[in-house]
Image 1: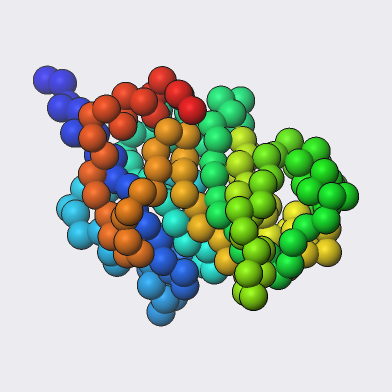
Image 2: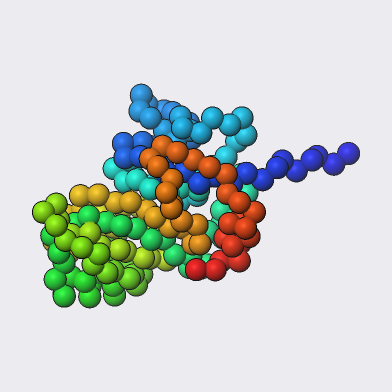
Amino acid sequence: LRKKEPQKIYIAFHKPRGVLSDIVRIRDEKVVRDYIDIPERVFIVGRLDKDSEGLMLLTNDGELANVLTHPRYEHEKEYKVLLDRSPDEQQRAAWQNGVILADRVRTGKASLSILHANSQGCWVRVIMKEGKKRQIRETAAKLGLYVKRIIRVRIGTLELDNLKRGEWRYLTEREVANLRRGHV
């Protein structure tokens, strides 16, 4: 007898700030699984630190998860980032060309564009094809900038759209097919 393959599950979730990117609770803090009440076992594709918010993908499809997270596939991740001030030309150029972080590894090339500045600081769009732990925060700090807020708005072809903080939904067949093809 063959074991029946479990049905593949694909969920888009808008992780709020202050929530840990974990499925299992190990401390008395909110985790992603507190928001998604389904019986199936899923795992997170593309974690966000506790102070960041935005789009997360949860699935039980290990093959797709590997394609989306492995650096060789170069899937883009897009973030809206609130900095304490506008980066100057040198800071923007350095961020885009890659910065050597504390682990002595240079970050990959990134796209950085200014969205708008106000009394809170400067909102920028960062698009990168890698995602090391706390990379945006550490890159900004290395360049003398302070990150006030990070919102991931896109993973590959999947967009946050108007999913509100703490909300989730199943992906459409078309969204899954687009992620598999890697269209950006």
